[in-house]
Amino acid sequence: MYLGLDLGTSGVKAMLIDGDQRIIGSANGSLDVSRPHSGWSEQEPAHWIRATEEAVTGLKAKHPKELAAVKGIGLSGQMHGATLLDASDKVLRPCILWNDTRSHIEAAALDADPRFRKLTGNIVFPGFTAPKLAWVAKNEPEIFAKVAKVLLPKDYLRLWLTGEHISEMSDSAGTSWLDTGKRAWSSELLAATNLDEKQMPTLVEGTEQGGKLRAELASAWGISGDVVVAGGAGDNAASACGMGTVSDGAAFVSLGTSGVLFAANAAYLPKPESAVHAFCHALPNTWHQMGVILSATDALNWHSSVTGKSAADLTGELGESLKAPSGVTFLPYLSGERTPHNDAVIRGAFIGLEHESSRAVLTQAVLEGVSFAIRDNLEALRSAGTDISRVTAIGGGSRSRYWLASIATALGVPVDLPADGDFGAAFGAARLGLIAATGADPVAVCAPPVTAGTIEPVAALSSAYEDAYKRYRSVYPAIKSLVH
Image 1 (cartoon, rainbow, N blue to C red):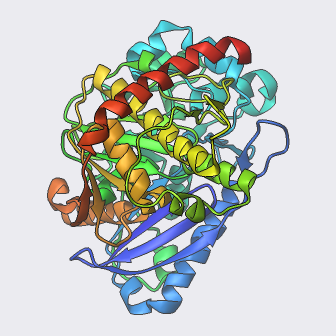
Image 2: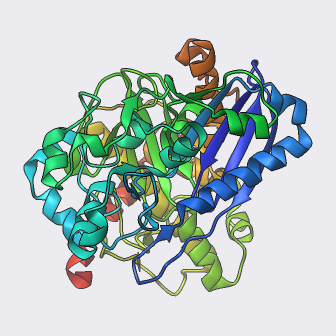
């Protein structure tokens, strides 16, 4: 048996799979986020351990024999968080999370240093780890002076599991300290934030061994014998392992609260000015590119809250057959935008409203707006050297066939729907645990799920969609000066 542990923002998910990758069971432990000031987002690392124990205890209650047979554990986690430890591994302050924006001034200052984009292949975003340490140095110097180790959230969980300070490439690529092409810490970038390599964890590949489960925990969980803990992955790379998005050109689109267009690459292809993330993948000698929009289903949920109709009712009013764009354009920038604009200040808009603009017309515009934002991501990935010939759709928004037809037509590529199953980060982490424990071929283990169906672009509407996309593209520069 193999155990995947996914440390998310709202909870920890534990999943057990067998040697044939059949899911035996899963359980969850809950987490809360603390927001002591505007723009702050924090969690106590002790709560991650409590939630993990809750999840594993839940699995043990239902599957004690299977848990006892675990030979490998894989870790996945929310990226970018700054967990600060002193010389005795005591936590110095609550972890500053990925969605904390307090260090935007420090991020801009680091991003202005050309070495960061050159070596990491990415813009220094406020959510990344390095600017958080610069903020601590400036605002909490007495804490900064005691920092002996900086760990990402899942790697603090690893410290508890194994007693070792270890990270891996995919998560570390989101710190702004990794030389992403060389897959190694950059002493130059660390020095720019008054840190050095001694304060960083050792690096392994996601498929390699990254410690062994401590005897006390193994005993408490009813496990005998050695249990290998894999390097693991950041949450998006782990989800890609679960989805089988590991070979060059394979891609998925995730329609969750935010939207992600993720493509696996056999080479390192940075283009930071496009606001595309270029990170290491969880598999050796593999990288990935990722475009991110901040409001995908969040945009539809906002529309739902304004109209008083459920998201399912709103999309249901459109029917199954894709309609030509109406002339109403929606920008889904409700909380700013990441790719391609890197603009935290821009806000959303409806443009082209008229007396005939019914609720259904506005719903259609919201779905099209998200589809065109994902098209922006595709164009950004293409400009960075990645061509995508088809995508697999995941996330809550993928339940709407209309929306998927809109995305297929906006992107001009087929959208595959996976057969029912849980192919998320916990499953990907369990796969990495299996690989690390058995030495199995990573690409063979991380196979894509069976495709249940494919939604093709609607050829008759491709020209109308192209015109609507050009209209959408022209709105951002037109309203930027009104918002900034």
